[in-house]
Length: 200
Image (cartoon, rainbow, N blue to C red; front, side, top):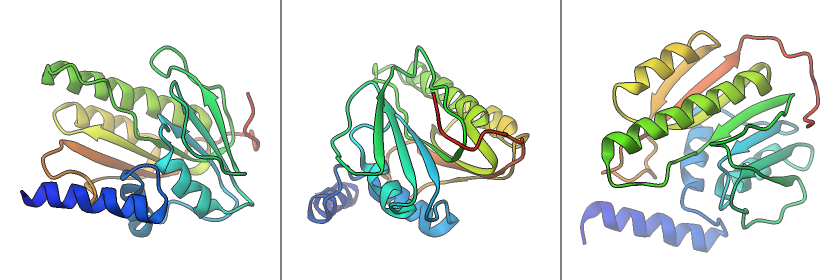
């Protein structure tokens, strides 16, 4: 077994053992440990949430005082008191939600096998997620999203740097070694959003 295969098996086993519906949960756990994304009482918008691993992590981190709004065209596989679900195709529309403290996006395209196409599609999804974050976040909020490595990352980071005082790329240990996925951490949203409630 290759080292990367052993690692993948490890995170899958760990997810089953600890009750997470996806190994992706450990990516967010690591990011939160390093960048202090969550605190109790926050409102979190989770884009591309299915099957729900990131929503599980966020739900625990914000406690019963907080809330998580999970959005995806596919249902999530978790049932938690502070997590609600909105069925929506984010390629075609976007949620009109305000007052988020954190916006998460683990959005990925359905892989076509044509790398250049898939890469550009993912960059477009990331830019849409950033647009949603800019419309949804309270001042001082945080945006965390997946992005595929390549020349499109620079344009995304350039845009993010206009809205956040802290912008950094990182690759969690739980990411597959051969994967081109990176994660963009954006903190301290600069634009004031007068809304203080998540609502449609």
